[in-house]
Image 1 (cartoon, rainbow, N blue to C red):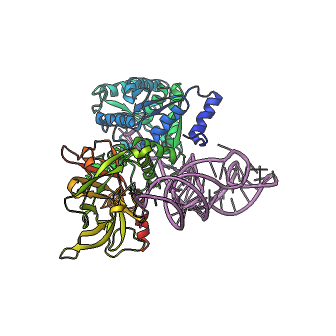
Image 2 (cartoon, rainbow, N blue to C red):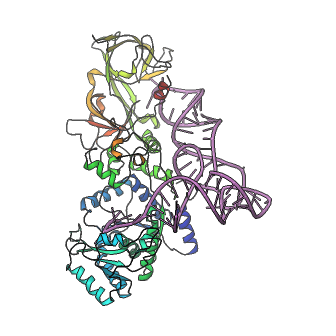
Length: 556
RNA sequence: UGCCCGAUAGUAUAAUGGUAGUACGACAGAUUUUGGUUCUGUUUGUCUUGGUUCGAAUCCAGGUCGGGCAACCA
């Protein structure tokens, strides 16, 4: 965070609250529901909550909003905790809304005793039908005026399991004519005879989110409860419960959720992609989940920087995924080791380099570092692999690479002059020929020749094989959710390309999971945590390098 | 035809009644043994109509457009 950076609206609120004494300490919380994996939209919320507390000397809790046992699982709890830690944050206290079930039940009883809640026997359909519409008031349930004693008895019976799912609910008695639909006698408790991931079969009634969230914040003394915009209309209800119960007044502030181009961000849609096997699980490297980004090779720092840069406001937004890519390139450019890898190999024969001869040439590990990050030795010989796309028999305009008669430098080695190529019976180029210039050796070049192009290469004798997985954006359109029809019909059919026979420099044979490499001129890569196995190297492409040539070549 | 929220370059985000700035992108150039990095420059913006004011992106009013709200989901 740079010093001259201006405050975002949440920081302004916090500073004002601290200055006025409204808050003495900032206490925030990240409140996920354990029913799915965290995605980059959650990262925005995490960075906001933890960042705010951090900046003002406060603390942040992790609280699982686990009030719906039907969809929640311990597996998700574990993945969420791992993802938050991976992102680089550690919470002060770990809580579960389910820890408050007893307290919440007591709160409900208190509201019944104040005549502010009643047990309703209407079915879900009947309640919906009598709720009215945004322009018409709702109609009271025939059970709305039950006595406090009867409500107390019925609610206790609900808790004791005397009724079946859906047979009765507990409703707050507020205002059926409210223009805010959430105030039209909202449901507080429903019967669900379902085992809960933490409380097992202790309960058969569960509080609704609206009856749990605000009180949970209050119980934890959360000073600033920040959430996304869609909960804005819930705020009056949240406040109503707090006031009627006379408990600590946490205050809620809403911000606009993150949207990213060429992907989807709703848990429902992400779940659909997983269930329909349109992707390889929640951690598919094309997914915007934190586990997917991690497997893809994104670093926690790059995601944190991204969240810093996108800012926070209350207006709907869609961030260009190019900004995320900029952030990871920025990070990896500074940290990743440079290595040579040929993804689409074609043979290059240096016809004037003696058969059987070879030499070791030093290559820098990272030109951004002091001393270039040290050097490793590259094996050089007569027969090399080069990238097929680095040769054009009929060169394009502004072509700096190999074509009959042109000169290029082989990175860290010699300048070569292309003398021609060999084709198969179908006219496909299968071999490129060239002659090297001995006095142009890298680091001791006395040739005086300046070439525009430099290409990467691998000595055929010393190369190793690997599978390389190239990823592109998952969707073909900027905003799949805004298109006609099912969003899955906009999936990019070439979002994954698997190369089974890439040629890598030998040093990559010892690559470890979690290490990041720049394959020179090709992009940033990391070991795939899922497909790599003993004796089988598999790399994921995190992101390509910025490619001004591809733009230039498209100009025609 | 209800209620709530919002509207600043292509995308985000500042300017808090006083010179519309920054980032990413795009474009042009320099440097470069990665068509990478780095550096320099250029381009594009206050939704609209009124009002208040010496002065409005900012305050007020009307309009337009966008988002949200009628789950026993969160």
